[in-house]
Length: 531
View 1 (cartoon, helix red, strand yellow):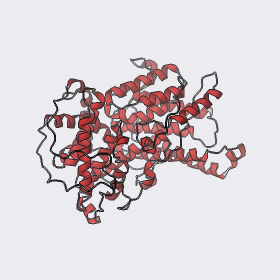
View 2 (tube, rainbow, N blue to C red):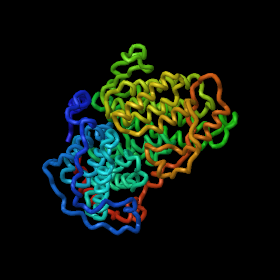
View 3 (cartoon, one colour):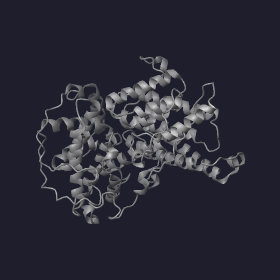
View 4 (cartoon, one colour):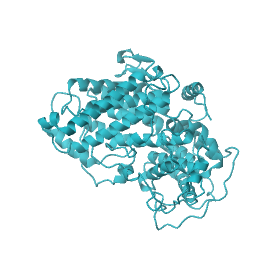
């Protein structure tokens, strides 16, 4: 199915301006329903090797429509609040417009959607509790694990459900205490053969999965597990420059940003030892890194020069011209994919300016580049009215905020984060803490017990506080009186948990022992069924 983009844009703008059916504060929680017929949800040990295999799932129930008040509310919340950001890079809006109809005949998909919708309500409305969301999550997980035991399963539906359950886990504050679908979703994507060239739901799941991983990698200074050169992105900038191809250009800048994330992660490893003056300018490694840095910089410049006109701002107001007298300019872009792509572009430029291999200290030129693009990011985030962008903008905004030195700008950034929290429910308290430490407003807490690597895998968790605390002590010893641009944040060099989740056999599969390999013809039989 193809949805006209002009209609998409108009509907998305109107959806924000005229919200007719859903307001989280207008809903009182419904009375507790009777116990559901399925058996009790599995615990976090469900996926352990000691667990007995569940019985086959019952016959699918085909429904013409939702007729339960609570399910309707949770699905409505998913479509209007969660699906919109999941579809940020999808021109056909599979998650918010197409797949909800498929879920009427797919119980595991329906329960995954309801889990995300219920989870969002618990984040924005304290009257709702997480129990219902957990019940839907456990039911969807149980149905998925049952399906994975069947070699004749619908492989695409399993992969799609796993991707959505991964989204639930990222939304969940206690995700690390439950089974984790991060590696499982990636394994099922690869089983389906989905990549950047895949159309339909496969392409939508691929881009959602790799973009969520990319945001985590930007936070923790990880390398992207799925090598971007293997994604299959069309990087021929001479094609698709006409309006209507915005998502293709958003994919291209996502690829570039992923390459920069890998470049930064490699730089952190290379800089473990001090580099002397002669090595800096004459060392073969440094020269190779500079050539790669310049290639990435040229890619960013070419992307900005060749992307369609409607991926550039329609209007730009200086800070003193804004009605709210913001500290940042008002940068107005219209289409959601254009907004996300522009945020990624400015993020890429900030990171590259901080990573020039030939500069141990940031030059005036690089400093100006950092501040210019940081202000552009803040200007977009400060004035955007599209709720579907806010969730994606968090990481770009945090990277830009670290570079700010003016107190008024820093204070406004915290207000922006508070607004995003109120609208989306994302827990960003850790960002406040990180920024205040970076700006020198307060000291970090003393190091507690070490966090596990699994905890670090989640998008919303903190990096190890002990590293922050030691860094703060060093900064205090070297602190200068004059205010200047803060140096790039020295992040702990942790390892992306997905690095080991690249190739799977049945015995090493994340869903082992439930997973049974599907024959290639079974994968091909379902390919394109949900396009």
